[in-house]
Structures are given as structure tokens and as C-alpha cells.
Length: 188
Image 1 (cartoon, helix red, strand yellow):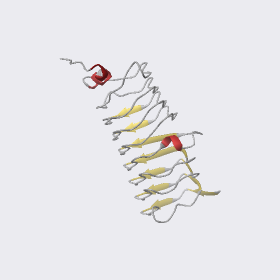
Image 2 (tube, helix red, strand yellow):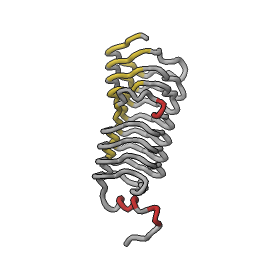
Image 3 (spheres, rainbow, N blue to C red):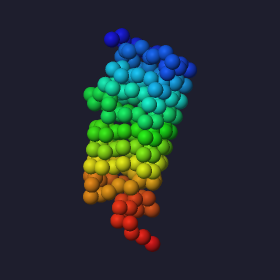
Image 4 (cartoon, rainbow, N blue to C red):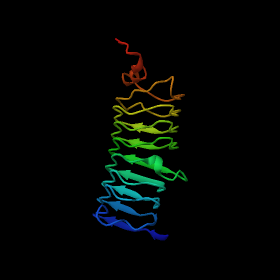
């Protein structure tokens, strides 16, 4: 596989012409369209995606090692298909609606001002992750490890403490009431 280093890619449409199967190291992708494309078996190390559309991209065995997504559209991504070897990502002002992190080990991941509506975190490990100002409307948390995760500025989450690990996780009022939603009680 080819190694492509220290390269900037701008305003490319990879939904029409496929991105070369390669190892990308310290590359930047700006205003690129990848929607519905195939990034399987591609490796990204210390790369940044800015203002890109990666919606519904095939991520089978894709490596994301120290990759940052800023202002990206990532609708429906199956992060559980990625290689788990050195998986490390961060998200800033991204739309991840309908994405899946099923059984993904994403400890210490930073989600800053992201849309996480209907995202599936079932059996994921997001220990010590920061969820800053994120919208979790209809997100799924089942047997998720949320120890030391910070939800203190996030909202619209419904997390069952009996079905998820939340030891030392941080929440704030009134959003913390989302931990009681399954009981269908009224709090005044």
C-alpha cells in the first residue's frame, strides 16, 4: 500500500472518483465529499478532516489513528466496522446522527458541540470521554461503559444507570433527569 504524507486535499469529490487506497499520514482534507464512497482498508494517521461530508462511507477495516473531524457531516457512519487497532478520533462541531459505535473502544474521545441524535453506543467503551454541548436525542446507551465520562454540558440523553456503567460520570441539572426517564416519573 502506498504511503502519502504531509499532503493537503481540497475540494475533491471522492463520491465520483475513489480516494486512492493508501496509508495517509499527517494529511489534511478540506471541503471534500466522500459520501457513499468506499474507504475500506484505508489508513489515516494524524490526519484532519475539515468541512467534509463522509456520510454513509464504507469503513470496513479503516484505520483512524489520532484523526480529527471538524465541522464534518458523518451521517450513518459505522465506526464499529473500523479497525480497532490504535483507534483514536475527536469530533468538533460535527453531525454524527445515526452513526454507530457498537462495541467500539473509544476511551478519552472528545465530542465538542456535536449532533449525536439516534447514535448507537451499545456496548461501547467511552470511559473518560468528553461530551461537550452535545445533543443526544434518541441516542442508544445499552451496556455502555461511561465511567468518568463528562456529560455536564450535554442534553437530551436518556441513560439507564441500571443497564450502563456510569461510575464517576459527570452530569448537570436539569439534564441529569435523563437518568430517570425509564421510570416515567414527574420531578418538580
